[in-house]
Length: 581
Image 1 (cartoon, rainbow, N blue to C red):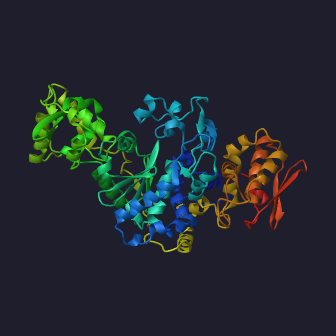
Image 2: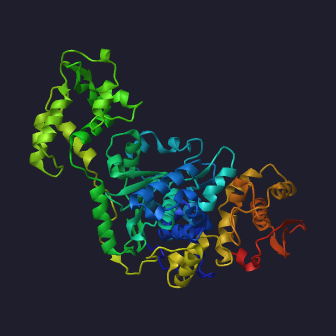
């Protein structure tokens, strides 16, 4: 099995055309088959004028004077205010397992795909399969071979969700948000690419940022190490992918490592460093605060503990679960320095004058931790803790096992038995302008396929080949076809003409048909290709042409019909041979 990592563009090579067309649609399956596409999208976002506009926003004034940690948090808040998480199946439409497998016939088979793709049989995350993954994603109303096109969006497509009904801001799915974070942290926050690692699991994508003790991007949010172990529902969701799933792809400025491919292009030293950093992030020693966090997550154990509080000079006792409940409406927490303030906020009549029977005193456990350090890797430490927690209310062996699992996650990463292919990092120093970014990447694209693919992902049709773009446009844009189902061809053309004549992309960059349809706007050339997609689906044998000059572009059909639109893209129109794939 080969993945064509160094496969450069050749219009006569069907696999090369397919691969470059994948850089346009960037579906989850396409990124899995061609893992360099993930970093190609990051590079495309780095060349996006949108990110450079954000960098000039007043929100980032004097950001260079902030610590790296503060710069990351500043960027996080900016993105959280502008984007929401989106996993709507209808956004980019549906396809079938058979259709997707046929595209990569001889390249990857279903038995391999089923090891890492949830919709092809992967069952790594027990949570999702306990609730039935197809029902969870809303696929149960379709036949079992129907799967969604979960397409990864560019920064512009993410921002354009503001034009779609029901979306007050921009939006994107997890891979889109991970790629946006990686680019924004580089362009805006000035985080070196050496410190940014992208991870994909079958059901999620996130980044590890090597700042301080480490940080994870989790959809819109940033999760610090303290947050990762705080026992809240939010941290439980952030932990789930690394607790339950296999990491299929790790992507870095130096390359990638894929769990199923023998060749790996990432610097092995960088991969070793990533493994060590991530493992350190996913492990914490047991402290009283960590134990309290564990109990916050394991609600069924709270009934085995009580807390003592001095009130009017006398000790008073209260159920632990009652105090944990009070946390919900407070920023104060059990287990840290704010615990006393939390207890002061609870009415006195909630407390008892005598200790509650059959409950451990958390205060005595806290005293134990003041006198003992407990390392998750030290069996003697664990044995002492086991003796301290031994109680009739629960099976201490099981509780200790669960606690150790809470405190230490061993990530299921791609192995190191790879054919390591040496290559230089793509971007080393921070760039100062979009023009510098484009110029720097232009110089590398002849030698690095991942960079060349970035210009296709950028959708810049003055720098990218037409054939892959058209193949994606006319084969993988079902939403516009379905949306125009009840319209005659002339009505579909009129609907497109009535949309604002403005592209979501600047200059010579082009939107795909479903982006035009979803966001209700487009340049005339984009509208022409959208109409072509609709007609081609209805009359596959029709001889369709895109013609025009200057600011007019027309779709001419085999039956003599012609529909024209106004364009300001200034692009040379695709040739007849560009439509043959």
